[in-house]
Amino acid sequence: LATPIGNLGDITENVKEALSSDSVFAVEDTRTFKNLLNALNIPLGNKSIISFHDHSSPNKVNELVKVLENKGELYLVSEAGSPIISDPGHPLISKAIEKGHEIASFSGVCSVIYALELSGLPVQPFHFHGFLSREKGKKNKYFSSIKHIHGTHIIFESPHRVKKLVDLILSSIKPSKMVVCREISK
Image 1 (cartoon, rainbow, N blue to C red):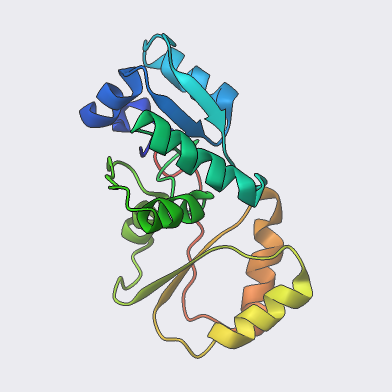
Image 2 (image 1 turned 180 degrees about the vertical axis):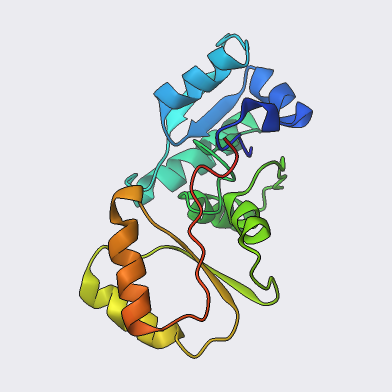
């Protein structure tokens, strides 16, 4: 389920309907999820809410697939945006497909596409790199590996580290144009 990045008006009716069900929800942050439900006037009801985030153990994926097998339904919810873009969703989706489960996506806002649309930069081709390592040496090595790849590159970074990232990009790959997006839909 894709959730709003900052503007509650971005939520789709399909997502609101799914959030209203008394199902099992694997969520990045249980408090944020409950706050979202509250803001949308959706009662907690008999929902089962399970924490699933970047720091969850690999065993958590297997546990969630077992929940899916037992309950027949499991919603993966991001704190903001699409749960596959920069969240830990890929291993869970991959394992569920491997086990023969049907996957459905409830579309909504996606920060990668928003940033691409707002940037004014060419959209074909574009490359999404997500969050890079915090280590400067690893970032330098990564930039060396992509500096000859043509197209628009989208990289996520914490607001507290953006300036350092921009300086590193300018010193290592010398882009012709650069755009920094923040608080895209607010």
